[in-house]
Image (cartoon, rainbow, N blue to C red; front, side):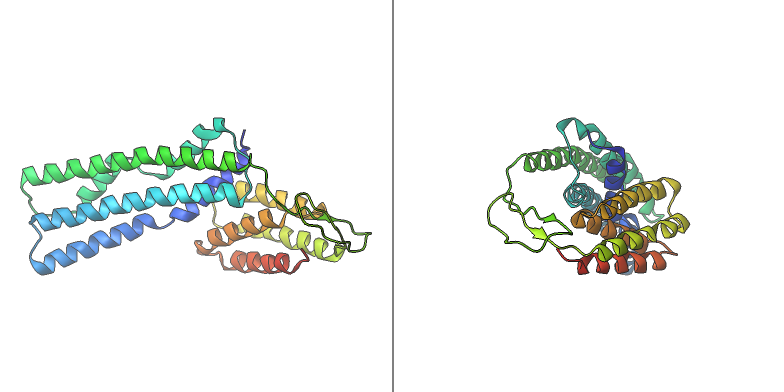
Amino acid sequence: MIEQRDLGMVRLAVSQKTRGWEGRMQQELHANVALCSSKGWMTSGNMLLTSEKIVIEGYGALQQAISAGLSQALVDLHITVETEDFPALLTIATQALPAPTTMRDTWLRALPNVTFPDAALNQVTATVQSACERIARELEQDVQYALEKHFRSGKQPQQSTLVIFNGAATVGAIQSGSNMTANVTQSATSIGELAAALETLGPLIASSELDSDAKKEHQAFLDECVASAQSGKPNKTKIGAFLGMLKGTAEGLKNGAALVNAATEVYHLLSSMAS
């Protein structure tokens, strides 16, 4: 079963992927009202149909962003999943997608304060809700596909390079094929610097404007990255994915500049380490 801290990171990834979608949709709706007003279409079918299109397309784009964020998080963070993890992942996805009735009401509130023919208004209202219900059903299918794809990819034999870091050994020959090994001298100073740099992110996360749950989830994953670095065999892929996600989250915060800079510096340090 997927661990709770990994579910938390998936939730954060989805939130990062979808941040600001409602504001962008509202801007398009306001711009559409201004355009229709300038053309004398305020009480016409054009006003209803163009605003309907904006809401449906915005809802569809949100659904796709949720699916993409969830799927990418499973890959980037190397999260192990089983088929029974579907309900937990679906819950994360559906919580990020407003109900179809909410989108219907959003569309109605965005209409100008004018009188439309009842028949036309009722028809477009029903169309908006019906289209959004279809999009919401497709989200379940997309989550199922993302889970199954990630689950199966983890079951396939992979041709990979397994490098064993041995601080006391000299560099040996690197062989081709699966499970190839090499003795590589790894700088203990670099590992120590990485762990120390990662630890500096903790106070910045704690003092950020993230809510308490998000702070706990970020800190839990940070602790895992620090432990990985201190082990002498840092998981560079997983640490890099966390730093990228942390930077993206911090960029959306009002007081996030220090955290963005710190995450960027740690990422540069990580990138400079010998492979």
